[in-house]
Length: 293
Ligand SMILES: [Zn+2]
Image (cartoon, rainbow, N blue to C red; front, side, top):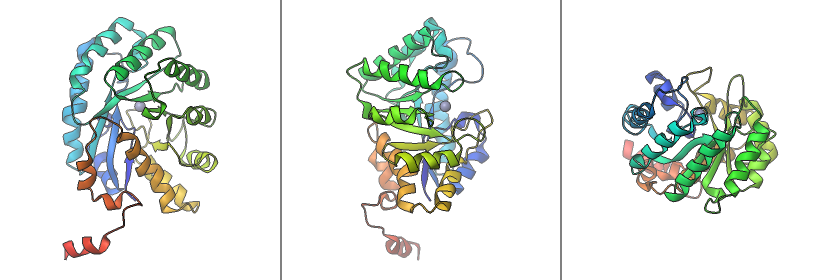
């Protein structure tokens, strides 16, 4: 089954992972800017990181027929340093015309501190001024429930932000309802140990349905599984869910959210043979078979 991994940190993964993703049906990845595992010494570290995300990584992905999208920001952990964060924020606009940038993210909270909140609001303001989508990281080491409530309150305090243009990530059993009821998109992160397992994600889909819900691997430099989305697909199939339901979560929902980006290009979707992507368009396997023969 074709799918998109809407949250994966490919800068931390080896090239073989792209090959494995492609073999499993991955059409595209979206890579939010995140913490590198250490605090950068200066804003220039971010400048090079952003260049990596908009220049090098799309080329590496392209070798395997995978489209690479990304999000830019200063992550919540390094946002504790407000003056560094402001310098980094000022570097972002020069990258906002790059074709693979989907918006601002993953912004959010780490330890739910005052400084993190200040920088979060400034990045929400940046997104509003440039009409960008927002991808949100909810805390997982500290209090996720409180952090999620704080984030939603801050988003509501800015009347320019429309809920349907925001994706709240790393939701779990105790936070998914708040995200969905607020009108936001939400995503479950499938981690082998912490966060959601494919089984828990399937349970949540059965409880809350498929509307505005995505799943991702958040594969990075720590213990994580870049093939977590295919494992979720297997779990959903094992439970007897239809292809249509599974495809909505792993392909049509990420596409529907990404299409709102002001730089989104329909050309890429067309080039993939759009008929394979959406159920509304009739399938044209016979035509494809003809081309092959
Ligand atoms: Zn992440």
